[in-house]
Amino acid sequence: MSAPVAPARALPWDTARGALRARGLRWTPQRRLILEVLAGTTGHITGAELVERCRAHDAATIPSTVYRTLDVLEDLGYVRHSHGADGREEYHVLPGAEHAHLRCLGCGSVVEIGRDEALALVGGLGSSRGFTVVLSHVMIGGYCPGCGPEVS
Amino acid sequence: MSAPVAPARALPWDTARGALRARGLRWTPQRRLILEVLAGTTGHITGAELVERCRAHDAATIPSTVYRTLDVLEDLGYVRHSHGADGREEYHVLPGAEHAHLRCLGCGSVVEIGRDEALALVGGLGSSRGFTVVLSHVMIGGYCPGCGPEVS
DNA sequence: CTCGCTATTGCAAGTTGTCGCAGGAACGCC
DNA sequence: GGCGTTCCTGCGACAACTTGCAATAGCGAG
Ligand SMILES: [Mn+2]
Ligand SMILES: [Mn+2]
Ligand SMILES: [Zn+2]
Ligand SMILES: [Zn+2]
Image (cartoon, rainbow over all chains, first blue to last red; front, side, top):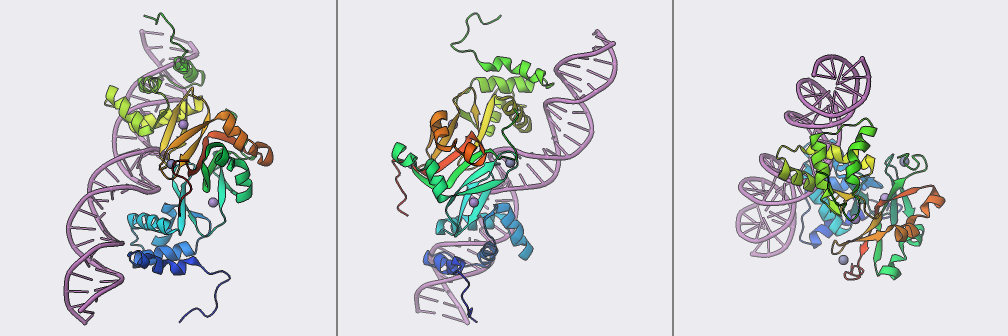
């Protein structure tokens, strides 16, 4: 019944049911499906993509339920969202290394820059302005080498 | 007929018609109204707000025309857009100092940081990664002095 | 002034979310 | 196993854009 061998690293998803119940929230089939899909995802996923993937398993999936569940999961720390170049939501599936984003306004590509490199750039705002930077919410837009500076 | 006294600083809006025609684009009543409203705006305005204000002058204003005109004006350099905390569009009416944004995840306040200060932070990405930063699309999230680091 | 090319508009439908509401479903407690 | 509380879900309406298409209307040429 129980998994005999632990995976390389313990997935936090297994704790979701308990985390929900501990807050007086409920474990429902819809939430279970959403968690399952997220557990099989690495990196980023948009709300619309998640709806799509859930529909592949259960055609009756309702968008508002998915979006509300994402809100709950963000409160619990299972995902974290940001907004893409077009303003659409983009969820980071945790756990993942803390990182900032470089987004190309031309081709839409996203490059993640690690904690150290990112802090070297914007960490100074802490001393200069008393502003505590949260790396996952650092988004730097511009043009990648391939797209180059806009000819304008 | 003509304004006898030039305003404190020449508005670039007067050049819009010529800028459009120079590109083979057309000067229409709809575009003229949108330009007039923008000329009377300082700072930020969302697409929806612009539609609203245009409707105050001409109830027949169509959203898609406004959004398409904003795209054209952005190409011409009259406005520049970014995305607010909720991902919605936010247009910066130019001329205005080029700047990046610092957004507090606690209270939602937004502080603009000037071109020089911003470039000192992220401009180095040009040489280190060949990435041409566009300041209006630089969003740095974190906590302002008033909100402090999250207790978490 | 008239004509023709084609940019632009208005409209309708689609996308991505958000919100209020009423019925249904978890869950703790007998 | 039954009950009641309260959370959730499904649904419909709405907000903010976006896109395709056919008809209209700028604008330069003649
Ligand atoms: Mn990322
Ligand atoms: Mn600004
Ligand atoms: Zn690119
Ligand atoms: Zn704050």
